[in-house]
Image (cartoon, rainbow, N blue to C red; front, side, top):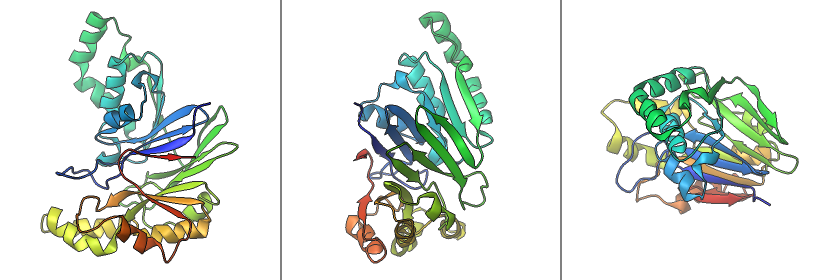
Length: 285
């Protein structure tokens, strides 16, 4: 029987990649034999292969919102899967605007796609990728797996989503990118695993100094659109989740801070099992 697990393929918050940093946000959920890729940041293709996934089995992708550190590599992932033998439909679920991204991607790759159809005898990639625009509520229910979504607080975006994955035996929730969100507590009630974005409050000033451009806008964005680790822990405790995993870490690459700092931020508020995410970690369910 196929094991159930979540793999955090990329755990860095934000789109930049620097020496020593982890990769931006991508995830793999495997439940009852069904594989779902959640978010497709830079590095998602390599991350899936490193988990032992055969790319030609790609079938279902969710995109939480249209920030580049969540969908930059969506097109390249699907194209690489196609070059790796993919011949079956791929369903992509995400916010309004995703169709424009896909149309633009295949237009930019027209020369290559046409050549590979003619020279390699491949089916037309443009004909079997299906984009589905989602709203809050049920995303889909099939073969015993139900995925539902709620909107998060991630201004200025409106269409930004958290996701719940439920089978008869397992419940996994991803917070998506969000400021502290009270309704996430009920959404994640009793979950086996909550994967929540997190910032270290004490580390933000030095991070802004390292990567900022002199404007305070980046700090303002962090404070209004993301969640401190201690607030993620409070959400997990109030939702009575069995395990909390921190991901989309801000910062993820400051040598002055490590797992003990994240644990110290959460310990006063959550006494369940805490997992500090890192690229490639597989969490068995």
